[in-house]
Image 1 (tube, one colour):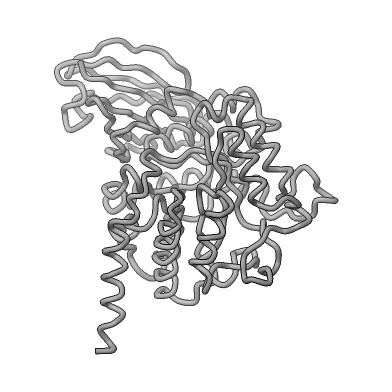
Image 2 (tube, rainbow, N blue to C red):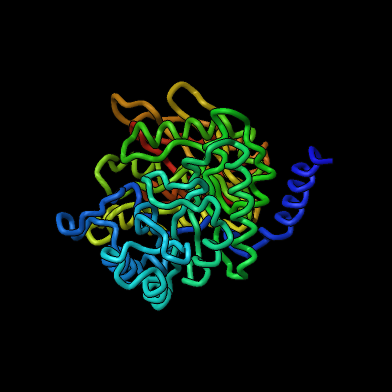
Length: 409
């Protein structure tokens, strides 16, 4: 009988999670700001007072999100990543914020964030240490979930470092999901479960979606075109296994938006924004909102792109053809509409044209018998009404993307 217990326990956990993770959150891809890519693990506030991971950084970002249109555009989660915690737990075994960098603690920060119409995200790890070496949640899943809920946390990013084994990794992700739901507070649960599984085994996405609201599949994003390009290519290569599972309440997460930083050209920034909309990705910026260019702000707050990303049908897009250096992607939208992206991967030369038949889209249904076509990026303009037999010729800059919206008539 003893050998049957783990299997029975897992079945009970699955049954509980299937009901429990209908937690009412992330019905569209969550949007917000996350500190990691831009600010990493800066903890020396005397040397870097405006760049260290501190209460000041997050209150200033909260002020910017409320005052500069970010909240109103949909970016509502202000998220702390690794390196916020004190090196040890308190005398009752609870996580605590570093007292020098977060003198008011996380609850005061949550109150500050909530008062500005925003929500607060925090970070922990399934193992006994976080990726940066701070206390992890192993052995404390229920206590940490209760602590986060008592502080007023609205999102947990749960990393997968130092888990010890695949079995402990999976058990930890399941247990934290159940513990969060048991608190009674709606908390978005952001997982890295499949990323840590993939080197050894194929993730069971049906199970992962029963526990997680969104999940990372691939390496951390960097502020570079090579990073963006590799994420898009990985997604296309694995789309048969990941696209079908995405939908309201559970999303594939290609990682942060790095628009407004240093590594992307304008066309590459357009590509990231367009492709994250096509992929129904969570939109978590990692940049400095205190010093962002007007162009980056326009792109990140673009209402037409955000409307595609947040489309309530909740279907993830996919690549439908690759022709030399051109890629054609589509995403089904509500109201029988489609978002279409033409990505030009070449990194030499100038703009080139890509032509395709509208009958190619939506298995022939996107423009049947006619449709209106509107360009969303890199600029907004109407392309008029077209018939099912029409072809479009799209001029795209190297490493750039043209994003279109096609509405059937």
